[in-house]
Image (cartoon, rainbow, N blue to C red):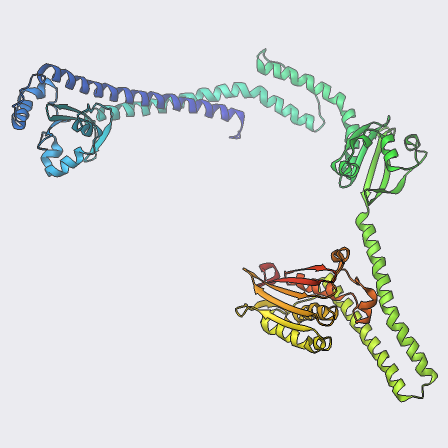
Length: 594
């Protein structure tokens, strides 16, 4: 029998009840005994005070009072056993007399210090009654205490619990024995009771398991008229009606499976009357307005397609498929008729498959092919023209050399373009491996600036680098980072008119390094800023081509910065200048190291 069954739970429940009852009785008896002895202790003291200590003379000394306590009052106050003690303290002189064993065994000062730990004693010292029921401890002996202040003398009494602790221990032993017997009896009774209750439940459970395998069999016998009997009767009725519902469940299952097959896309289900049965979240997000989902006709009107619902239901049109546009997105629309087990149509499933990304990729591919073709066409045309001229014969050696240089330059231009395209392809397919090393950015930036200084001087520009002297070394590929900096600074030099300036500022951040390339050149129009990192994108195509640009430099720069785990962005104002910000991490992340 499994320990998590109802039968064992009932046994454990009765077991726990028995434990709780015995423990509760034990606690109550313990508290009652405690209360009885404490109440008797207080009543004896208060009665003895009222009869014998009310009319004491003011002139009596502490020693005389102590002698009287030992001779007479100890009996009147019933303090004569070894577990009760009295202590007298003169408030004015702080003299102490006591018959407490602790006082007689240790130093007087230590005993007085122990008195000060008692709230009742301190209350009496303050002139109040110390009659709170509080438990104290001294020399590992627990006690109740009581204190009274009369005519400048504090009467402090203790009642050690040793007197009734033995009785409580005996009582605890009796309760433990009773608990063991009670647990054994409750275990037996609980087991028999649980067996009686769970037997019919087990029969119902076995019957339910057989129904789960499709075996309805005979009905269960109803053995009683109690709750278990009524449960058995209801279960028999349920199993009888369950078989009648199986055909309906099979039809519903076919519908649900059809819908679930398309759940990743927008799916709508309509019945034979064209009324909506189901709309998944993706379809709601695509169509947005609920009024277009309420029936099939409203949906067809919204999608602006020329088809009638009855043509689909009658299967006049089969496998209807059409591309539709909704809110600047393209979707493939499918109509599917779902049927029951008798192959009769029961409704229509409408599926909307998002083709926006695929369409965008097709457009990007076409644009890329067109850009590459255009970029290669111009240098190839030049090479073709000059080659034909040379083949026709040119008598002037200087002109021949000029034509050959043009052909060489155009060949270099195409070679650079092909290399750039191959580099971007390696980035796209994650085949480019960076050669990481410790990079001195100050030196790298200064080298790049010096490399471009002559070009800047020819244009009449001022170019300078401003780097923090405490700039840390970073982990990166020196060659690729140089490629980025030469490209960015070179662009600034190219597109800044004579008299302008180019400034490279480098600063250390908390965990990164920021490089800013600032110029006061021609700037970039706002509409072109989102596309500056696109491949072959040029703001001014004619000027870029004249300056030798291919439209791939910024794309390569962004890929390299991204590969280093950094960021690059551009802000610009036309005719005022451009600022390029590059942020590079000082150290590689764990993922990049792996």
